[in-house]
Length: 187
Image (cartoon, rainbow, N blue to C red; front, side, top):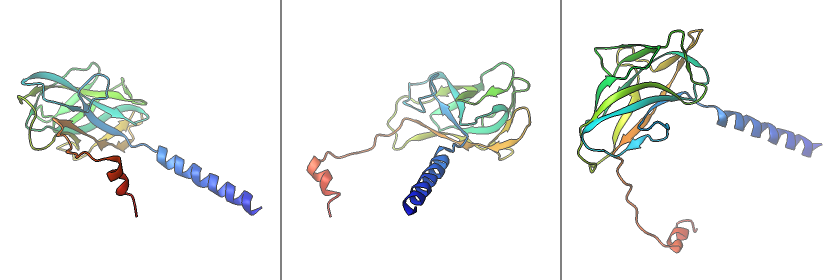
C-alpha cells in the first residue's frame, strides 16, 4: 500500500511540476525578419529597414496594447508602418509611447503574431563596438504600462518586454582539451 501511495504522490508532483513549467508569460520583442526567429542582427550599413514587434504566448484575441521601444544609437526610428484596421495613438510620433487599438479586428494572438511594424534607419557602418547594442520593448513612456487588453472584454493583462541585439559581441573562449574539461568536474 505504501508503494502505491508513493507512486501516486510522485505522479502528482510530476503533474504539478509539468503544469507550472508549461505556464507561459506574454512576451513582446523586436525581430529583424519575417519568420519571427531573428532577434539579433549585424549592422548592414547605413540605410532604411523594417522591423516587426511581435507578441507570443498571449493565448487570446488582442484588442489593444500599450508599449514603447527603446533603440540604441546605431538604430533610429523613422516611422510607424501602416497596418490596416488599427488605430495608433502615440506621443508626438515617438516609439517610446505607443498605444494601439485594433477595434473590431482583433489580432489573433493565440500563436506568434505581428503587433506592429516600424521603419528604421541604420546609422552604423559596421559592427565592432565594445558591447552589444540592445533594442528593448519597454513600458509606455507616458502611462508606464506594458500591457494588453483581451478582445472583446477589455480585461488587461501584463506583458513582458523582450530584448533584441544589434551587433552582438562574440563571447571570448579558450580552447581546452577533453581532459581539461573533465578535470573541472573531478573531486
